[in-house]
Amino acid sequence: MTQVLAPERHTPPPAVGRSNDHLWHLAFGGLLAITLIAFTLWSFDFVGRDAPRMVLITTVIFGAFMAFNIGGNDVANAFGTSVGAGTLTMKQALLIAAVFEVSGALLAGGDVTDTIKSGIVDLSGVAINPMDFAFIMMAALLGAAVWLLVATRMGWPVSTTHAIIGGIIGASLTIGFVTGTGGFAMVQWSEVGQIAISWVLSPALGGLAAFVIYGVIKKYVLGKSLSHTLKPHMLAPVSAAEGSVEAQIDAATEDVPAEGGSIGTHSALQRWVPLIAAVGAVIITAMLLFKGLKNLDMSVTTVGGLLIMTMIGAAVWLAVFVFAKTLRKQTVPRATYILFSWMQVFTASAFAFSHGSNDIANAVGPFAAVLDVLRTGNMHGEATVPFAAMLTCGIALIVGLWFIGRKVIATVGTNLTEIHPASGFAAELAAAGIVMAASVSGLPVSSTHILIGAIIGVGLVNRSANWKLMKPIALAWIITLPAAAIIGSVGVIALRTMMG
Image (cartoon, rainbow, N blue to C red; front, side):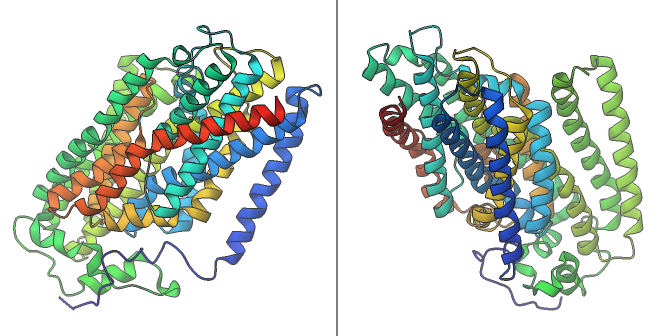
């Protein structure tokens, strides 16, 4: 094989950022500014002219700030494997995030939004003033967003779910003690306990699923020699003009023979990859059918769902089989890289959808709760999430990914373990399935912990997991809830003093 000079292991992938992106910076900054102005003007009519303007404007800023930091941390975490593997450039990741993150929130995010909004603080257990409840939600947004910003700047992928729950708990307890209307009884500790159990299970389930999926891929498709040729450190860094992944593949695999034994051959690709793709398609389709269509009042019967899943699985198997046959003239490593690159694009899209269905609620839920209080003057167990609010948070989320997501992408895509399209596909498929299954149950789990667990699962298969890096990340996970709670506690006192 032609030897290719390699970058350092912990160097961020070349697709993460370019020096000539100032026009993109201006475009995204302008888009966010226009969106916030337009939404603020719209919200004046939505909540009514009698609602306190300063509270409303502050809520808009806090909600957008929270969504911005979700984009910089959680969405960057979600796309880290794709960008780190070289499957997607940063701009392509932005496009996919824009479409699928927001679509997931609109189609499949309702259950989790309700849990975040009203499942942590007991609305019926204490006599709380509606504006105090609004201040709790505003402070929770602020506490979570500030901690997320700190963690993102450090390159730590942390849980936005943990952060927003910590903010709600800290602000709720503070209001209860200050007003004498409650205290520890304001928090539904049983709900927090159930969520805490899911936090422990999240990385374990993600790791186990990815370990199994990638173990199968490595055993039956890659083998030791082919897996080695697909590692990202075998690919030379390229200039902006040479930014395609295929240019790197050609350089790294040009002298690899087309056939190399029972494992790592074109026949193995044609036998196993279509089957793996079909199974993945069936899993993802099941999640979309029984969750996404439910909120559109287009739910299907179990038999109908099974038929649709079978048809899609068969279609995907056939399409990938035909695609694999067209690659027989390519070297085996190059054909493998191309196949899994395309498959990773689809798993990245599915993970974006499942991520949007679960975690964008962390910004929209408290945001919608405050808008509901300002509009009605009362607290309600459920509140309609305005489409304009969802769209505003979605745009802020994408802008945050662009501006501050690079360090988290480098951590997830390069530093925890070596990622290539096959291992990235396995991690994303495992994480997407676990996250969407949790979303179906209405339980707000941490997609961050699930995906990090999946990446570590891949690393265990390759015996290349970076446990040293996991130490500060694990510490950040532990700190997240109390840090957000402290900021939320201080924030609610400040808000109540200035606006109460």
